[in-house]
Length: 192
Image (cartoon, rainbow, N blue to C red):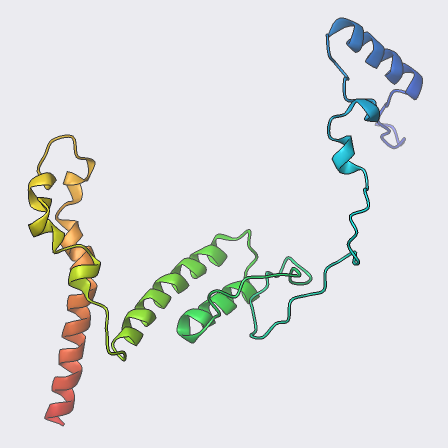
């Protein structure tokens, strides 16, 4: 082994130019974009005065605290505020952004879980309103009896016939569990 450091052999500019000319002669159209004047994208890459009075837009005022990925130094100038974090789902979202990088599966799994928690929270909040959620009409169960729903389930060439038995469990299961839980809580209070 020699003690000389590794030095990659790079062609000099003259041999690089000869190689490019040889490729251009051998392959039709090779190197068509080498000259910036020939590149189709150069006009959009070139700086043209736009009349904007700023280089970086002034940031949107942050009325409520928002999540920010740990990879980024600052929020973008404009950001969405359609679903501000609140409740347990907001805490989960804040934890996902504060603790995990966006490249980690844990970040996205926590955000998916926060979406499910948010759905449950909104169902529970609906019971405090004058028009709570109605699982019969909102899940489409009534159409099973009025729009040939049951008959259409037993036709051939349906991909979902293997898991038909799961549909009532997935749709009605959480509502039945919530009703049973409310019954147990009310019964426990009555016996005290």
